[in-house]
Length: 163
Image 1: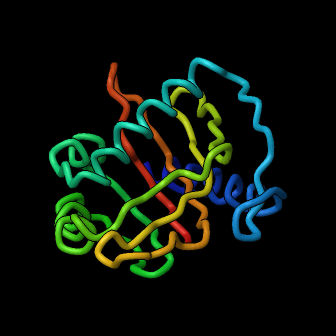
Image 2: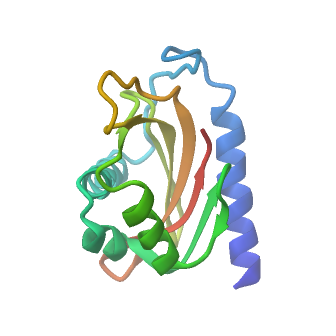
Image 3: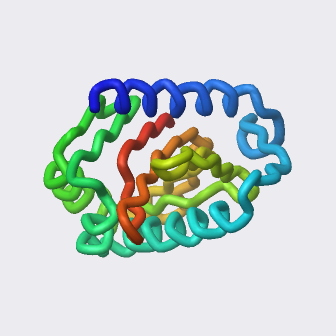
């Protein structure tokens, strides 16, 4: 199990490193035209991403909790490592709900299959303070999400979020 975690972390870090070299638009962060190896997997992860982040933006904590694996590892450049699903949900309730909106940078999402496990999603996103009139979105930050397919259900297994 430890070897699997190390492997997944190395894969996600590698994808993040490669994506850091991509060139394009938005606040100096550039994107490119991504052509997925598996279009069906791409559509699946894109749909799941949309459902999850709609729940995030509308403070639907029940849906968010449903998506997180019980063994979630969330690596955040400012908050550090969070390994408690409950702590992650509670932090969202206290610090995000009604205060922050997340938006995917159009054209930035990439999805790669992880044979026998799931998929890796990488891209750019922005956050905006919704409590201040005239607030502008943050500069785009990078993210990597490792999705695990367990039976017929997809769960968010690991996250790396950089701002």
